[in-house]
Image (cartoon, rainbow, N blue to C red; front, side, top):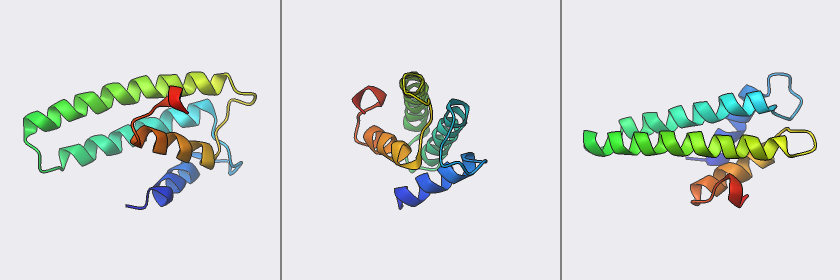
Amino acid sequence: PNFDVEINGLFQKYDADGSGHLSVADVHRLVDEIGGRLRDLIAHSDSSWQVQEMMVETVTAVIKREKQDYLTQLQGTADGKVNADNLKDYVYCLMAGGGASAG
């Protein structure tokens, strides 16, 4: 999959006013949707149901923790908003095994 296209699509969906920035509330909803998409991917994987359950629990816990860390970081910024490049950096950091504290 082309993650840049996916991230840009999600960004545009939540940037309802077209400002090029997401508020903290927008980011909260967007990260919840990303978590839902990950859980759907796991549910449709070829893994056994036990592995799927374990993976869903792990993804849910990580998304919750990372969302809180990221939102805390945003509140410490000057405007508390995210642009598309910030979001891409964050998602790629997560995919690489980092997190909000790493980026």
